[in-house]
Image (cartoon, rainbow, N blue to C red; front, side, top):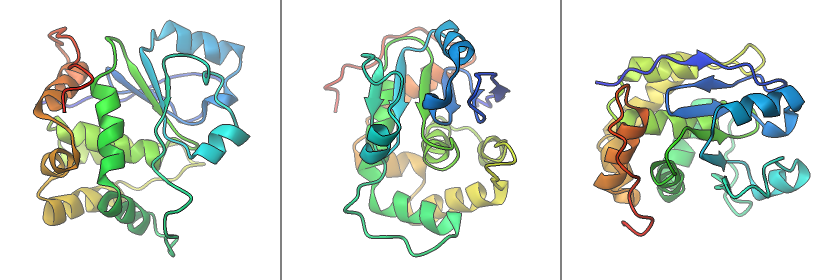
Length: 215
């Protein structure tokens, strides 16, 4: 069983950045100062996955937009029906239930990244990044309590309750047969699951990522 210990990272002026061991999560990278950019460079990131909407990447361009490591994988689409609720759990369930292929695409990008830490980011680093991180951790058998604890490690300006993530994971178990079944039905492969476990393992086996066409 893998139980990652989140390590807060100081990347000025990002506020919600932490290392899960092979997977780094963060808020919007356009806030980075020169010291923040230097800290990111020192982390030897192999892929940057930007989960923001297309309009966000245009209004607030990532400083890494021209970097070949940068991928934009939006979890939202302007054509999506509006979610008429301020309740985070309601919003999360709607995304999970209606757009599984988007999450599978994000996790595939993590699994197929070159060796080295993968960075996943959105605007606040709580919601979209939190969902992709939670699914990644659950896919490699990290206990739900550890996943919820990581989610709740957000700073005060981005309040996050562990109970919200616990309820979401229970929802996936009851309605989709669990996270692994959910992701496999959405297009992730067993090879991708193995690659995710290898990437976040405390003792990685240094196996190469699966081929990009391994679907």
